[in-house]
Length: 445
Image (cartoon, rainbow, N blue to C red; front, side):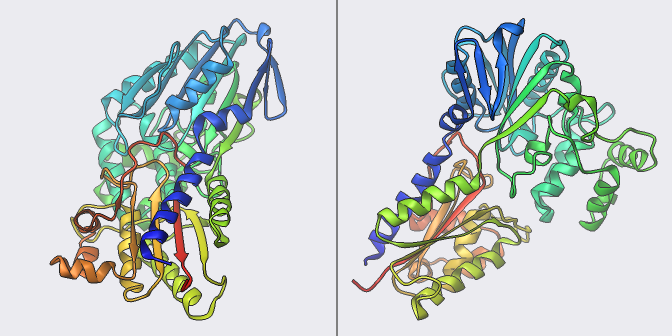
């Protein structure tokens, strides 16, 4: 089996995974209407009982999710505002889209968040509020507490992204310097009826972590936040306003975010409409259709990117050497989201770094291709979703005057893969359910 065929099949399998978590399809699976009756996750709502139906939300998939809601609620929808990442758009009639910054929040996001908060606060008992949440929603719904500036929050976010903190840890911190995260948006919307539709970009789909859980009970505390900042040794470098707030929370001077006993959640329904496992399942089925023995490894993989890459490379070698855990032609799919501890000042993202680290470990191996890409179409601060490699990638890099080890040490995978033509560039996919990683091992036929 040629390397060219393996590469083509890897991309076909990746695209099948993307299609399975299309936001419009996901919303239509979860939300349906028959006349004036709206159904969601086994719950029914008579639209005639509500004076207004309002849509709010934030996330990279917000625009297509909103488009699907507009179709379902045709004639019933009053108004709406959803914050999305720049360029992640769709055609809408009633709901207004506000483009904003991600992964670092900006003033456009703040303005949109204020409008969303205003709609939530105005929603009374006779209002049905539909909230659309997807990956990136935390950065796209920035409304710092009084006394903390957006610039101070941006600096904190940069430190958290650079230190290797997990998304759960990053969002725990964000929630405690925000007016809307950690269930506080639900508190603002009470006593309205609130339905939140969620595309999960977090391992295990914890409602309080996805987009920092604006409409879900929060399990993190000020004490947790302090411990995270101390563990990653960034506490002393934070703005005084942030340290003072977190310390005041630890001392009980500021109320913590609402937990499950809060009345704000009595009329709230949170529903995960798509996740990483759905994408992986579709990818596995496509691999089988293409003739591969296919295995779903795990949707819960996290940890340091380079170490995870070495494990995947070892699996590829084992398949070639022994036929375990699958005999070639074999496909192993994994998901989840890894982290990168920045050691250099190069350009890249966790998926490109994964593939470069894997390329070094499979150097010289025949009939093997490894792909890793973000389902949102964005890998770090680049225009690529990820990259793809094979056993000859490092050799080709050397012939082109590139040094793979040096590029890896400098977190500089992007220029290497760009020169080799091995980047995966999809543009905005308008979905976001973490990453897909694909190992293909062909047979000798």
